[in-house]
Length: 130
Image 1 (cartoon, rainbow, N blue to C red):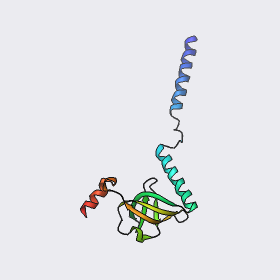
Image 2 (cartoon, helix red, strand yellow):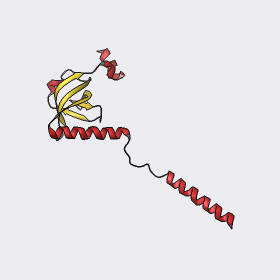
Image 3 (cartoon, rainbow, N blue to C red):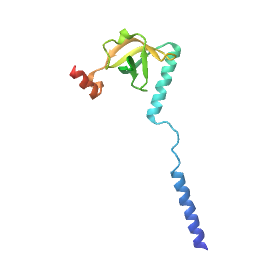
Image 4 (cartoon, rainbow, N blue to C red):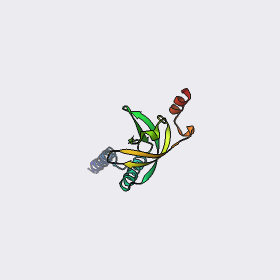
């Protein structure tokens, strides 16, 4: 009888550990997700206050229009003043811009090209082919 109770207890303990191991992971944000959330919050605050913000990213053509892709959260922003980025399509840049959350656009005030060492290998190859 003692042996049977010991086996039952061992079975229950191992079954409960197995079930606990199969539960989905908690919904904690990873470090990258936290960085994205922090960037989005910072953008929203700057937009609400009408402040100029410094962003790093890519000027790219997307669906027939030129947009700015932010490095932090990988979100595409419409550019309200296209003359400010003319000739920089496909370049990695740093911009000083005012954000407009309602239309998800930005008005570029200053644009600085980043060094080629900051660009990806794919982008460098495109530049060399030109």
